[in-house]
Length: 441
Image (cartoon, rainbow, N blue to C red; front, side):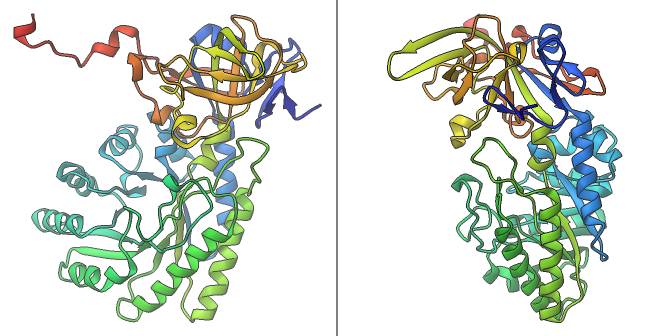
């Protein structure tokens, strides 16, 4: 059987059913669109668990401790926290909203790593009170806030110092996060002052360094180069601070989206990091540190897809044919924000040949509101169910109410079971925070 349906490479656990419809996680996608409505995010629990286990197995080859922390910004809800907790992973959060989601789901605080820039006092206070495992800091004013909090509460706070290592990754400039002019991380020249400040506060315990290279990276070199820089820093600073024993090298492993993407497997990524760590520590003459990586996209992206209903079409002779759907940049802003590309198919006509190349357009009042700029489909009719593949990462989590559109539901599928994990917003809920001043009544 072909690995493609129309313009879509089949995702793990996706098949063409005997009815000619596309199925995912043992569920008929056309039936899901009927039952839950569209637009609809569909997340496959079994694919998530499989990817988590792949990370765990690969990391088990490192004998000095190798933690996997799921990057929750890629996709988060309480059900996702439960899955990640059940798989034994840690969790990377970047705001009080993400932290609250995790804690309210019962996720263990000691397995949480709290990132962020310019976090409010309340966010840091709750993190300290709840005893999160590590707080990552990349600026002096947050270290000062944490010093005051630790003193007030007489509670130790475990820190990782985030570094802008200067390593450039071949990815979109908006998601390059370790270059020296990034808003993230201390520059290496700042470290003497950083350690002086932390060492002056007996309750601040610096455990190691953190550095995140970027996102949607599909080659090994940026990761191993970033690791090499961090190990050199560890070797330099361990002479004065032998308690430094941890390196968190962030996430960033990319995912397949279209045929242009050259995939780097989870196994090759982790084994490459382990090999680079073994070589560099031997050359530097230091003990191998505890390692942590923070994958998000590579765990969730291929576990997700989005369903839409086709409305009408618009043909511009010699230029393009637009197929309009009931979704928009409000449910997937990545094409407008990053110029991202996706693949698509008709879920209800999977056995029919693709006969034309079209652009899938959204309903928002923006020329840039495109879901897929180019894909191959059968001639569409109103009511067809369009599936856009590999949308698990950064779609629901970046969704908005732009044009006052309600946010869509999220359904968890697996072993033929389909359950809501985030309900759709109703139209009337779009105004739930609106207030009308008395003089306008």
